[in-house]
Length: 432
Image (cartoon, rainbow, N blue to C red; front, side, top):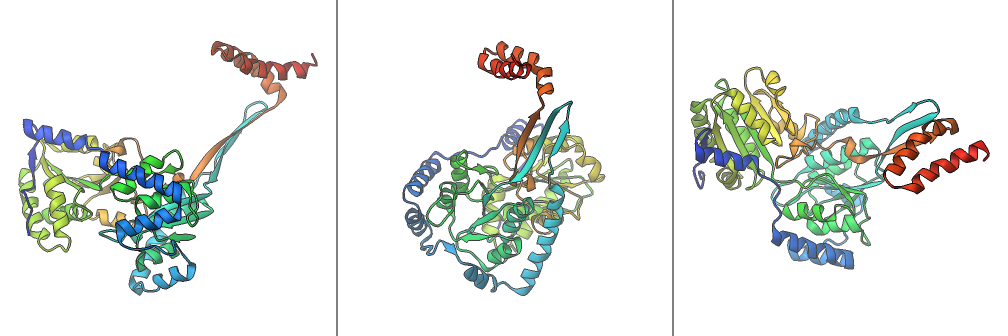
């Protein structure tokens, strides 16, 4: 099977091409009104009926009754034991690398003393978090490692895994990562259960991890009741390549992204028109051999593009404007080129740094900002599982020394009680 439609080759500078490129750069996480309405009803049902709603909704959407909702430790261990030994070994090696990388992200806070005025920031872990691991068309034990291990490093007291139809590999990853409890539920109903609490699912402080459109919309709607990492859009990769790049490698990387799902983005930007043509041919050849070729073909047809720019400078500028989740730089002097990029979730330098290494074993987190949010958002990390508290301690003389400025600013804002709360302390000190 080849593409259901030819992969687009867009030549920057041509009006139709520029419009298509602009649309790619302006993509976002769209809210489907139908999905939003259905999710709202699911959240209300779970909030009202708890476990009964979670079970009924899971039976309705997945055709299974998640009874019991929480898997006991013995059940988790029994499922995990079915993992192939070599796969377990790879998961353990990945976990060590992920933990080692994230341990360098710990924050300690600080304290300073300014003439009797002690100020500081105290960093403490969240109490309980939920990590979501999708089921559906693919299994993602790697996502369990990437979401749970930073929470463990941060010192979170209780980590709850939400996953529909837990696979042996997912349960094995949960054991290795240090997950405390496992709920065999997914979808919007799982997000609702974690946000509001049910008889079986404890209410959490934060929900993290990727999911489908219903999971993303549920996270959007429960934000405020709990914290979330982000409202994730479809996964995406953008490759920048010059004439030195290999067409077969570029095609392989584009397909690695496209097989995630039919809504994935896979884009090549290059100043070399001959390379774009060669990659198109390689995509057709390699696609025919993929088990998930129908999914990848649809993604390439609907969200793929080969963009030809005037020069490498223009290609890098377009990549920065696109702000991709994953950016691959297949160019000479890749490190120097990376220094010119401000907006990307993760940057992969050179031919021997594939995105798949970052997905599984390298160490940096693979939960990354999508849909252009790399303009302002960061990868998931230890910082997502802590909170910061300001600590202020004034001595009497320090407060007296700042009293005039504080009361003056309070009255400038029309807040007389604020000013008097300072004056009463200073008068009391003077014995008046």
